[in-house]
Length: 362
Image (cartoon, rainbow, N blue to C red; front, side, top):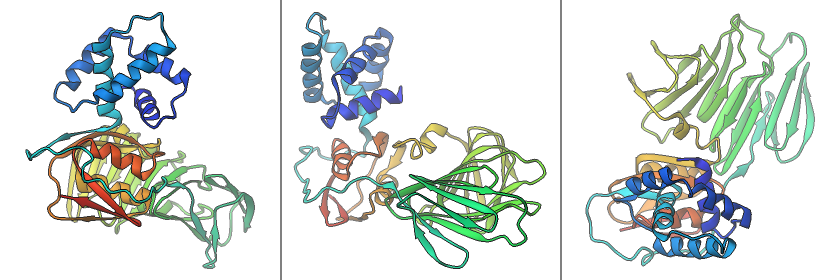
């Protein structure tokens, strides 16, 4: 499914969809082959008939001359809702009204571009403004959402800086060699102000997406959780949060070596202690966070809530047993916390918000 349709549906549901975007959504749903696939995909999914009916009425108003075929458009709306929302493969339990137990006292906004730069001398800089900083022969430019390093010549003494994102923050850095790194929330990257040695080595905690500048004479390594990832290619993602069961390295382009395993594009190495599992994954799901949305594929509720907790800077607790079942779908990372929870509530999972704590109700 085209991710653009997901975005259009979410904008419609949040009442931010423009007339032009409605026209775009209508045009996309004109495709008969798409309708057929949507019907197959949506047979076992929870529908959203009221939202679909409202969409039909709005589209009819914008194009009165068009004969709206209700059933295909309703099917399309339901399926786009599944993808833009979430659908649940549940462990059977009694059904309940979708919002019967929802208690929302406040709305928490999504994370933003924010980070802290810690210099070699221990001083810190909040990256909330633009400016230029000089460290030896290295120039550091602060721009909105990105830190850019430019090393001039070889430095006699190399300093190490640390870029840290808080919970609810993300940031990008261009390293002195031209490599680009995107940091997800609650992450930390330590790196030199110039790469002078035989190797280029950085240290990571949390999650980051890397696009490495090629240099066959100076291999790149990522030190994470006591081991090194040897970079033999260009684009890969590393997820190494301490509250996750495994450290995952996912290759998009080129090659990386994890322990004694060389990954191919589309493969992920999941490491837990001495155990390493190589599996094929959908790389778009893995780097969805970098592209502005969450993507879940047969994920359990704790997995989803850990991601939400880092992005919205909230804590999670469960009142009673953890709801069972797996979820698949996408949620935009620009949505507020309440909007994101409303999506989850379509799967009959209920919450209450107490300050910055989300309580999952039985």
